[in-house]
Image 1 (cartoon, rainbow, N blue to C red):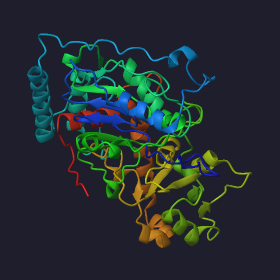
Image 2 (tube, rainbow, N blue to C red):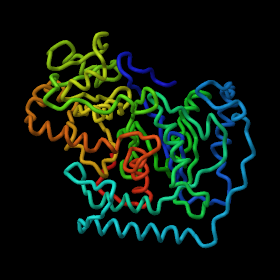
Image 3 (cartoon, rainbow, N blue to C red):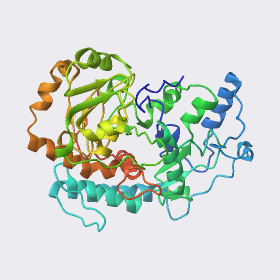
Image 4 (cartoon, rainbow, N blue to C red):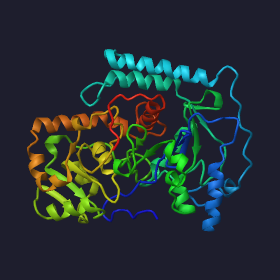
Length: 430
């Protein structure tokens, strides 16, 4: 069953949130993209799989609510005839276009060739190779095409809630279906998308183990996961780490911005339930021990959770039952430098971003030295990290509609890199 929310902060688990499928299938928390799939045949496993699930669980589609679609949307319709590829766009032509993009990106990577973009040009030490990133991003915008299967009905397909801890799934499903990257011609597609909502499966059917339960799917897939834990099978070279983002009202309203470094009086802040051994150690070492280290299991009623983020220089982002946490993005949103207290975590967009320039990594065996580590960082270095975090924040922002270089486009870019088999930064699978 889904794990409970923290009692004092809007944080929880996102392990089943997003996968993408490559036959190679890319599943995005039930969102599925298939590479090299034959578009002349219907991709049928999700329907038969869910029929079996519903038979097993006795689950029925629920009556419509204010948060869901109209009742008529639950009536299953016959799958439409599969669209046929155009005659002038063979698989070889699609692959040839990707080969050309690959060569262009490699050239920018080798020679530090600068491209121009009127909206944004990435610069600074936050980017591992800003020239290669910009060239790759522009090639993605020019070429990348996604074919969306029409099969399936809400609430399991084409729909997922966009509110709360798992809301990023619903937002991404919707944005893919309306984005310029969508093509109606399967012959022009680089990936094939199955808009299946794992959040809805958990809510309306039962808790699945989708990729592990289908061995061929697991073996031949690029997965997009919040729980990007390399000790649990996540492979940074082929899988995509999705930032966990909590949007209380489905938008970023009230979440962006905070005071400058000189107006932040608290050294470091954390509030949240004791989920997992890392948080247990953190509480044992620092709860109620030092006024500079504001560690709370339950935040006092006179304190504001987001207000504490905005008063703090650093915010601790520990693993819970699982490795991901929305505090990392909350810190970037509010100008609080994230302190990543995690084991085996593959950071989002690590192909592109050098996290050491705008966050602090603390190992579990260093928790007792937390204050010493943070106070040893010179004020000038802290201010630079805080400034760089604000600069890269755009890559974690959720915009409706989506904007260039925001989190939606960065997720697609991570998938794009794996589709064309390019590494902008060395990755090491555990």
